[in-house]
Length: 245
Image 1 (cartoon, rainbow, N blue to C red):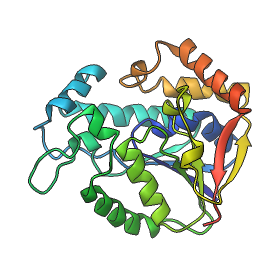
Image 2: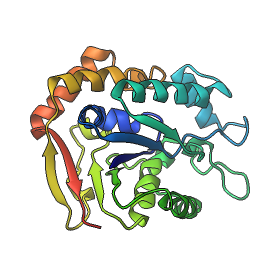
Image 3: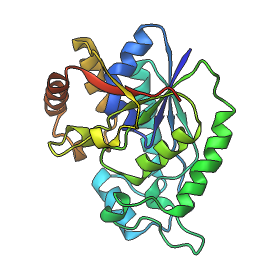
């Protein structure tokens, strides 16, 4: 049986549930992280918003996605997971039929999913459904934070019409104002996965493999360790939600 963890970006699965992934691998499960938005931009005519993010990450031009993919391979290797990178570009690179950026601001990427992306999710779901077996367990972000790529990922996974286990999106789930309960599908069963001290250490180490991304959220490994430990203490472990279909 495989654990197939759908990740919107090249860091989300590890940021969100890296300790759990490591424990799954240690227990002998084959863990695969399928990152949807891991494709190259269509060209280098980046929007001003995309350039702002590149500057924040300390990356430039064609190297941006290549570096982020390398970070993901390293992080997944630390956890004993297999990284798979799909070809959809990050939302900051996607454009509509007329060539305009679909998400050209901070507000836009935390707003509504563009109709053009709904069609993309449906097409990709049809393709990926053929690669899954009935025995595979699928994991999906709950969409805490409302990022459009997280919305797209959830829409894709739910269109597969199969049992799903949802996880809370970190770092958004760590914020005091985070409200996961309103996002849980009707009829889903909540449960808690324990995370060992060793798993927490692996979670932190793997998260810091994303050198271009992690400093946007945490000053250092100690700060991330403290934030995750507090989250696990407050929730009694790692919260998840299971559906039957």
